[in-house]
Image 1 (tube, rainbow, N blue to C red):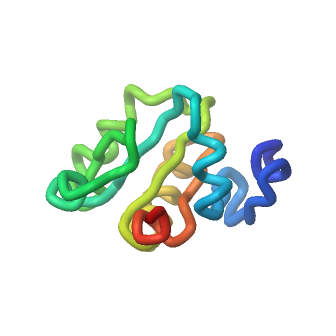
Image 2 (image 1 turned 30 degrees about the horizontal axis):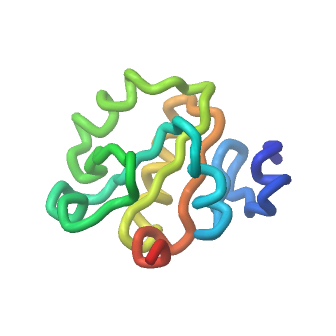
Image 3 (image 1 turned 180 degrees about the vertical axis):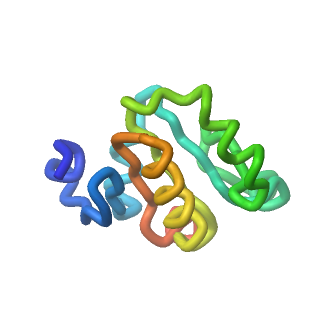
Length: 113
């Protein structure tokens, strides 16, 4: 279990993936420069997103994987979608790409409000 998941009481899903509650997710990304990714479609992103998030659409498989080439695999990545299903798949993909600390927002953007 990572230090952050221990501190925030997150639920480990896999070795490198931790699902965080909305409150813990907000605490983790507040006042920090973090790798924050919204994996919804561009239209969903344009209709509202978490401040400082970058949109990388999971449905665009080719660009999805290549977009993460510029990300630091050793630094935490915070990820979310609309309800949690796509971000779960995206987290598993990032895990397979070698990312070490992946934090998934439980309930997605719907829970954020």
